[in-house]
Amino acid sequence: MTYDCLDWTKSSYSDNGGACVEWAPQYASATGTVPVRDSKRTDGPVLLVSVSAFAGLVAGVRTGGFGTH
Image 1 (cartoon, rainbow, N blue to C red):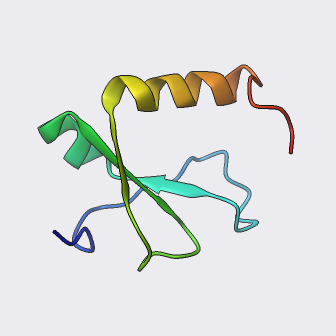
Image 2: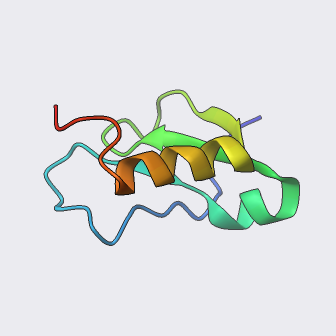
Image 3: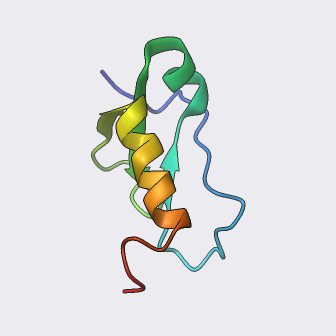
């Protein structure tokens, strides 16, 4: 399956420095699976994760649980 037709979103906190991931919230709502991709390589691979795994990732980023590198 291709994911080109999805409406991709990146965080409003992104500084447009190029180190961003994008996700497709409408697809996630409809399927319970969150597609995630590198915003610099929109033609690259798409990682599919569960909604709970994505929520854990977001929570970890918000709390600084992944460091600053």
